[in-house]
Length: 190
Ligand SMILES: C[S@@+](CC[C@H](N)C(=O)[O-])C[C@H]1O[C@@H](n2cnc3c(N)ncnc32)[C@H](O)[C@@H]1O
Image 1 (cartoon, rainbow, N blue to C red):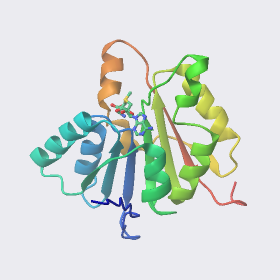
Image 2: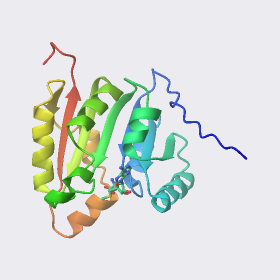
Image 3: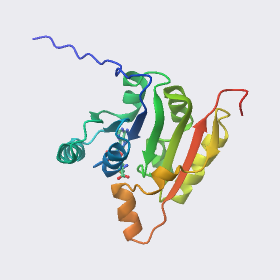
Image 4: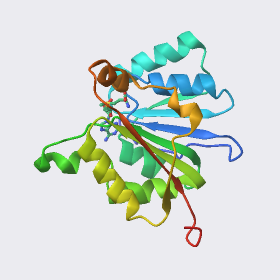
């Protein structure tokens, strides 16, 4: 039988707050965000089915009806499934740092990624990045500083108290996890 895969752009209510957690892992951050923002739609994206299944079970246990779990590669999700100017926040938290120079191309955060998330954020939308890897944080700061359509902003209060699964692991090992945020600005507003 011939099979056709059809991918659709997610339907979003433009009036609803939309939070995207890219590379959510087991998704404690997504779940807590959905619990703390009951009127928002939280979309948790990852490629690892086992981790997403855990998040689905957690969401069911907590009765979170505003959390959507998407099994997808991040770039594909952002390009093909997320409409332009539809997200209030995009979170990329503790992504794999790929510390060796020869593996850097695997990193999710790059100049192209910054352009892509800029298109997907609503005007004034937030990009939130965290990592325990200081060189990765420095690289992301350089990428974002070279993009005039983003301006640095402090981590919002409501996000300071939510930790991801990996962040908890790093903190328990005495590591520091840095959080960096930018808001998307229109040209001329910078
Ligand atoms: C180090 S874990 C961090 C998970 C979670 N953000 C946390 O802090 O607990 C990185 C996650 O990103 C996911 N990931 C890596 N590359 C990805 C990609 N290209 N698209 C979607 N998810 C990806 C991995 O499957 C993994 O679950």
